Length: 113
Length: 115
Image 1 (spheres, one colour):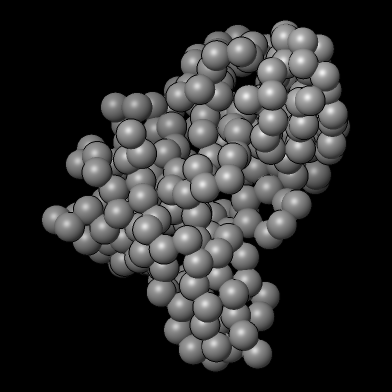
Image 2 (image 1 turned 30 degrees about the vertical axis):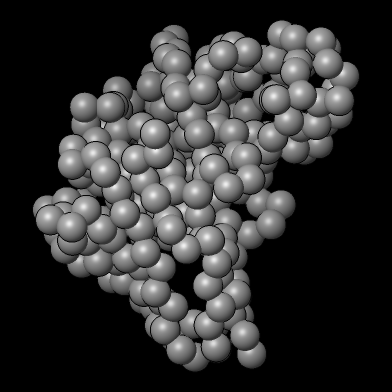
């Protein structure tokens, strides 16, 4: 049973606008969350992370929000750029599972010029 | 500093053949991982090694074996390949040993097709 879900397989956004990617999880023990970005024919690259003791973390154009009560996190990209076109994976982990990562299925983002 | 490297990049096997996927990291990381990625399913953990000399099963270990050869290298072996093992395989490493919250860094992947 998939514990991390990204319910939107794809997202199309105009250059310069905000991209919002969503992720839901079912395991209340998860306490560390990450977003990875993946280009075709390459491995995933780390983008940003957040610990459960925080509700927001920013890094440049990327902000991750965590809502523990709703078991929901989101990634905001502002402003979106053509180089942001990629697949984005949400991942979660917890100490009871040796911090092994559980991944969502990914959201493909296309930034239109 | 190459990060995480994987060989080969592509491989085609016939059902029943065996092969070993190689992975090496030069970041002095303690933990290493093998994942497979299938369409619509994200990445699933096959095996991991929290430190040199230890290996443990992940979510989908059946049909695979691993060897943590030393701190740098972690190989994945398919003893008798099956079409269900057609996938893209990623190796990853992280600094934390023994399962600390940490960032995993991925290699470029091996695309395997089993006919």
